Length: 315
Image 1: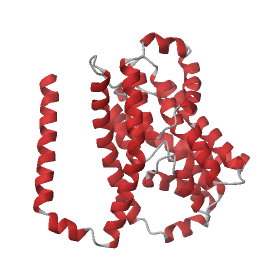
Image 2: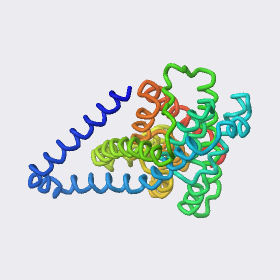
Image 3: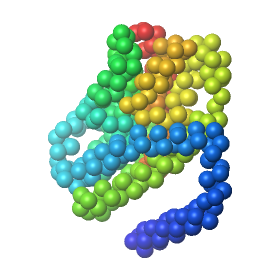
């Protein structure tokens, strides 16, 4: 096992060295390529996503390492109800305590599973934390002044979605689809280094994909979609997946989409922190691709349905 891990690290270093050599050789061509407006827009989107998310990746890896190396296992046995069905809502509400985005919640959820927390509860926390924490709710209140029900609707719909997915996994989830992250005993600083390297790598992959899709979506499509309320809900939820904006910033983007209904913008705010490109990449890297390709679409469908229902009632 150790030989395989060393081989993987060597292969990664060789690829990085090859990429650096190629960049040096082709620096003139690369410099010219990024002078076009589209290329500059791509770079702007890519850098913005990475810069927004990286502090929370660091926060998440610190929390993950602390949970994995400093917190006794018996703490979680005492903090959460012994019955998994009750542990799910407790873990979901605990998401209020983490002022971070989805980039931080993935490594923390992985650490919770390693410490014996039932996967259903850890997944409920993973989805709730980036959507209902105080920083996100405060940003939503600032982005939608005079509309307190928008904040309430985001809290209710996001928490309901996270709990529904936790209970859904508890009922229908298959253990063979979920690769719980395992690691040998290690120090806090070694755990931070390994988590940071993994999370940052998948963040960059997701950010690059999001930048490509962001540049390729024509703005006029938004005006066409907004004219059909039902389609607009699904469209803005899909747009949230493609844009991959951190939850601390997405409310300001949603507020700027004034041509859409409040319910459609609520779907944008509910789905974005739970299903986006960089989060999918991080989930696939942490819990396995077979898990991610099933969990993400299910979360999208449940999030859209609950956002539409909540919007109809509260907005």
